[in-house]
Image (cartoon, rainbow, N blue to C red; front, side, top):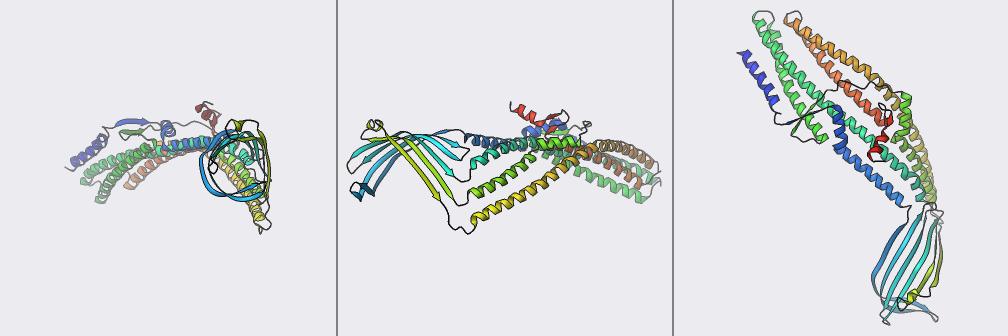
Length: 493
């Protein structure tokens, strides 16, 4: 009666497990397919792409500053009724003025990147109605050339010219690197599910084995071949294996959900994985990896940007030292008249030069303090960058050495997995013959389970390091080409 009852429970669990997903569409994925899906349709890929596009537009905005721009400004209606100071040949006096004014200006301007000033050509037209005498006046400036130039001050254009292209190059390399980082994240989700799949297979195998051993041992106990204590331990093992099997089912569903969610796969698709049974046989020269990383990694450009930023802060502290001066020059023609036709005849010269100067007498050391702070920050930045550079190089070299060791470690794990499986089968047969005890059987089973987990852990570690080496060097060592080539091809460059 006990045998039939246990077999019915076992059959019900197995059928229930297989039948629960029968309504779902089967989707079998390899490791490379999971990586490609993650790089194409994961939310991280979407975010990284738009971050790159944002940097691209930021760089385009910088380049636009070097080009001339055309703009139209107007003040179509301005009414005032106020007292003004009027000056004529007899002197100055106060007069109430009520007027309505309209004005429009068309200008073409250009920043001077070298000096930080700007030059412009503009034309404007004014219309003024004076209610005091009920007359209408027109004033025109058909063309005027203006120059505005700060003197002895911080030139932001000069430093943006150095930093903006560097920032955009960093953004491109970060975008390329992000694809490899997504691959590593996809690998973790893949192997989390693969571990869960293997765990439920182990749990199911252990459950079947525990059920079988308990059933067989009941007969042996009745014949006096084993002690009652051993039979109880086998029954406890059977119950624990059932609990472990149920927990493995829960972990499997959780891992499937996480992978589907990351890859944005619909819930009506049941995902299963293809075990990656082969790896690329690849050895990387540590010095070559360091050379590629130094030339390609965005962190190296980031170090360079930090040093330029530190120099910019010093220049800004020196330029913004409280002393300011500005030169404004304009040269053109203008005319006024009672009609628009008169405002555009027989133009008069219109010239102006203005030089402003501001010098603080006492600032209690504020300007000097800003300069000294900037210099101290530069020293800290230089030391920090040097330390980060050393750590970066060490990480590249050690990671390369570790990667090169993983191939042999993986081969050893694969052999250990095969040997432990055969050992367990032998021990189980000897236990049923009464030649080994339960401790030996359980030890062999644990060795088998641990060897399988270790094998898949080594595979995960190998692929993580494989893509980590790509991410820090931005280089495809399998095909001997820079990852930037693929990036440029995808953009049609």
